[in-house]
Image (cartoon, one colour):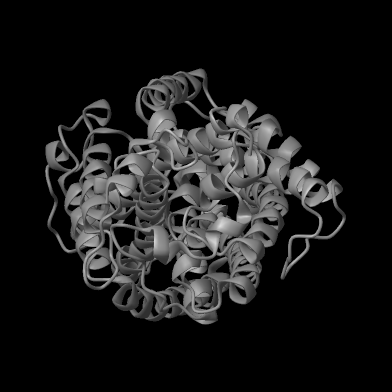
Amino acid sequence: MSTRDAHSIWRRMPVESMHDEEERTAGGALAKSLGLWQLTAIGVGGIIGVGIFSLAGLVAAGDESNEGVGPAVLIAFLIAGLASAAAALSYAEFAGMIPRAGSAYTYGYVALGEVIGWFIGWDLLLEYIAIVAVVAIGISGYLGELLDNLGLTLPTSLTASAEEGGVVNVPAVLICLLVTFILSRGTKTFGRFELVAVAVKILLILGIIGLGVFYVEAGNYDPFLPSGFGPVLTGAATVFFAVFGYDAMSTAAEEAEDGKRHMPRAIILSLVIAMLLYVAATLVLTGMQDYRDIDPTAGFASAFEGVGLPVIASIISVFAVLSILTVMLTFLLGVTRVWFSMSRDGLLPPWFAKVDRSGTPQRVTWIAGVGSAVLAGVFPIRAVADLTNIGILSAFIVVCVAVILFRYTRPDTPRSFRLPLMPVVPAFGVLASLFLIWQLPWETWARFGVWLLIGLVLYFAYGRKHSLLNPDSPHHRRQADV
């Protein structure tokens, strides 16, 4: 790398430098303890959850700002899933080449340059924290439904944001802190918990589908498109939140026992399993109950209560609370690993990259957990979900572009998985992501723009100067003094 290139904001992290991370991580290395099925469980745990238990009902029934799409929520999930599949294959190719913490941040850094990597990393810090928050809000809705069925009703001031007529969503705040505690116990403990919890979640969903199908009424599918196709596209942009958990799972690549071999398989497996369950679940939900009667915050619980099965509704609420925790765990893991990776690379202070004896970055875990608790306590679910979607769609665009460029600029780099139909598949991923971003409200664009502007200031004030790729970085001077 020439001197001019070394000082450029477009400097790229060499792939070759990523195979000996332990040697250059002053704060300690991440522990390798995740096998194929644990990785797949993390992916499925991140994908399946609030999409089925909350967003499916929200998009089907609609709210004050958006018309309900009714049974066509199925189409919304399929559109989102198709767009996500193109990105998933791109992630799989990169994960097979670079089994390193950081996910889209790392892939953008390697293929497109430091400033792009920074923006995507900065983007993911907000988006993953927002995901944890929106899932906590979804769990809070099911918890409220459960307590109502038991005759215990919490005041609105303690279960809703100010915009929804309350003050602070206390259950959502407490759930965020609980999940933070679980993740802080270490990756090995987290992996075991996730494997068991995801198995319970899948059994629950299969049970819901198997029982609910006996209460499906064909008349509830008519009209299938009650509001036309436009709201379906908007709905696809919202439920996209529910089909990309694999990207957070890819942030744990450095903790995989055989990342190059297992990561591509786990990404593809997790998306296939999730989409099959989503299709079946949305058909049952909208077949059991008229879409206008679905509770947007606790869809399946309200559907079973509507057909005269309040006990089943209570059981669903209990297990929904437990199973959706896996989504929060996956994305909280994601934000901490992206943050850790950016700090290790010098773009953020190295204080954040410090790990404990079990190889867990405790500092960023608790900071991210508290941040998600604040968001969950004061914002409504749709605003947080849309903010999440614009960020992750932006990351998908970067990864799809990066995989095309890297295939042609570094064709000889070993790849354990090569996505098919290059460049058609990733190009479709770019177009689909751009299309879904366009469906989001302007307020979401404004909030996202402000966050990126803050990131731009931080990059030029700190990250560019302290980057390990900068030969004048204070980090190099400290090493020289030693």
